[in-house]
Image 1: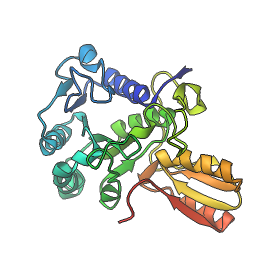
Image 2: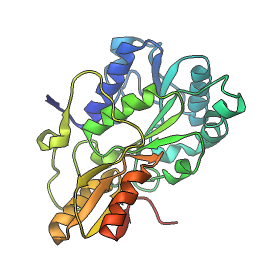
Image 3: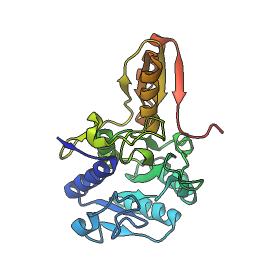
Image 4: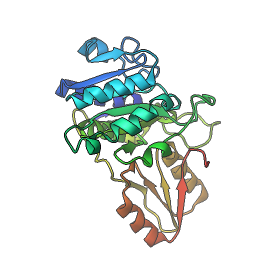
Length: 279
């Protein structure tokens, strides 16, 4: 089984989806010829052509709006917002159009679109490259919101998102693109190549949306977390010696309440850990 970075795993998922279904198209700012600012889409335009993977103007509202129209007419667009911080001009399109299309058309139209965006801090990106706006999506009926924590899940969740009949917000913690993060900036970076969750199966597979996973069983408390903070939580538990159960939510909407409630009932304590701001 190949070991990949999260960048490579996401690219592999896009490659698998585009190879299996000619209706899958990928577009956004610099995703075509250049391969994306993080090189996630590198090589896709050369392999599938400029009609399947192409660059757009710097216009997030236009990118998402075009994707909604394509989805309504039968394509499966995977659009990229270069950084999650840039999604605000597209927010009305996502909330008022993509999320509502199935309901407002009484099921006549759906919006099988994925909106990818690198999210979160940890790379010293400053105020316009470090935001974590996931809460703005998890309160919107009609959307699904996904935040993977490792390459294996990233590929499987992205393939599941592309195949979903409704819009999915796919948020990629950029601090995890090249390796897990234990919360200590002064320590050497650990590569995914040496991590068990860096093992990514070849070909097509999916990780179900709406299903959390227990990363570490424990009895003293339950830690609910996702994305970058999964690895911070695991490191903190190990360093503190507290026998805490660490649950990786993976999907924020829909939320796997069954797994969460069962754990908290058993441990009697719950701690929620995330990288986003409190207010």
